[in-house]
Length: 88
Image 1 (cartoon, rainbow, N blue to C red):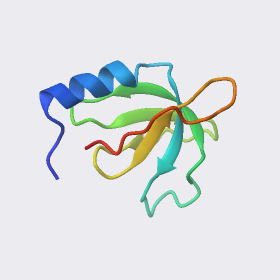
Image 2 (cartoon, rainbow, N blue to C red):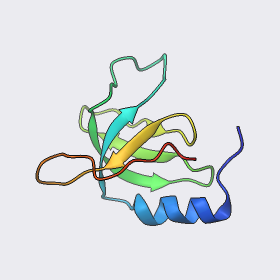
Image 3 (cartoon, rainbow, N blue to C red):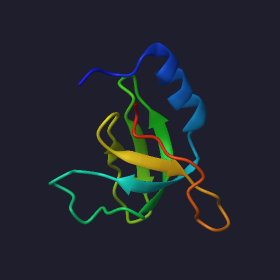
């Protein structure tokens, strides 16, 4: 899988700023089957390949992989997903 274009990487970094709250929409990680859709966390950073690194509220710190997983910035009051990205 190819990484994000420079424009998409800039968008990801602007949208998923450190401290933003996110909700996991989709993750396919056989090593963390307990991390399911609906999990909430706080963005740590977006790296050079577009992975959104998150400190999940359950204590995990697993990244949302560009093009494979999906998360969304959430409304802090209701936990509602405002938008999402599958990294494409």
